Length: 438
Image (tube, rainbow, N blue to C red):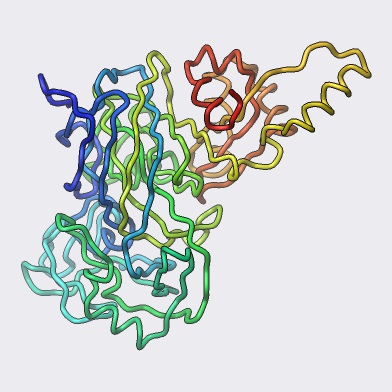
C-alpha cells in the first residue's frame, strides 16, 4: 500500500530489495511525483537468488515505489533514462534441478535435504557446485546445477564481453560478491562462486536491458513468476504461493518479460492493479538474444534511472512497450519524408484520398507457450484499441511483427496503430515524441 499523507518527492532513491516476492505485502517507498524520477541499484536476477535458499522467487528486485495519483484502472508510463551495468563479471548457463531440495518448484519453495528446514539461511564455503551450505545443519543445499555454464567478464564502456576459462573463473569466484558488485543491501549469494566455465573465449556484444520491471501485482507472487509462462507453475502448486489460473490472470502484471528492447530509451506503459502502482525493477541482463533460449542470460548488478507519468483511465491487463526506433521491427518503422512523399503519389495515382496517420505500438503477451502468449498479446491489443481482432492480425502482418521475447511464452505484438486511437488512449503524445512524429 502507498504511504499515507506522505509528501510526493521529485526523486526517490531506492537501495532496499525484496526476497523474491512482489505484491501488496511489500511496503512502498515514496510516493514519487507524477513526472518524477526513480533511481535504484539492482542486484542480479536468476542464478544468485536461485542458489540462495531463503529466496521465494527467482529474482531480487527493488522495493516498490508509489506514484502520486496512480489508482487502480490507470496506467503508468516508465521512461527509461539510464540502464547501466555495474558488475565486472557474472555467470550463467542452462540449469537442472536437484531432487529432494524443493517442494513443487525450486525457484519458490526450497528446503534443506538434511534437516528439512524450509527456505533455510545459508552461507558459502569455498567455490564450485557444492559451495552453498545450510546455516542450520551445515549440509550442502543448492537446489540447482549447471548442465552447461560460463563465466563472462564485461566492458561496459566498449560494450563488449568475453567468457573465461576455469583458472580465471576460479580467481573471480574467490571475491565473488565484489566482482558481482552486489548492492550493499543485497542478500543473494553471487553465482560467480560456482566458477562454472564450460565456454571460454567467446566474445559477445553488450546491450543491457531490464528483464523484470513494472507494477505491483494485486496479490503476492514470486517475482520471477509474474507472467503467464512462469506463472503457470503456480497453478495448483503444492506450496504457499499457489494460485488458480483465474487468480493468476487477474492479479499478475507481467513485469517479468525478459524483453531485450526494454532498455535505455524505451518507454514501458504498465497496468495499475494496486493503489500507488508500486514500481519495482531488477533482473538486468548485460545481453540477450530474442527467446532467451538457454533459460537464463547474463544477470548483472546495475543502476537504473527512470521517469514516471500517470496515464489516467487507461485500464490495461499487461504492459504496452514503446520500443526505441532502432529496436522496432522493420515493417513497423515510421516512414521518412521521401517514403511519405512516395506514398502520397501512389495514393493519388489510384485515387485513394485518405492516408492514415499512425504510430508504432507493442503489446506484451504471455502464456504457457508461445501460441498462448501470441493469442494473449493479440487479445490485449484488440481489447485496448477497440480494433477488430482480425484487423490486428492484418496490421501485425503487413505493418508490424510478432517477436519472441522469451521461451516458453512471452511475445511482442507490434503494429502501426491509428493516431486517433492513441489519442483516445491518452498516449499519443508519448508515441509522437518517441518516434519523432510531432
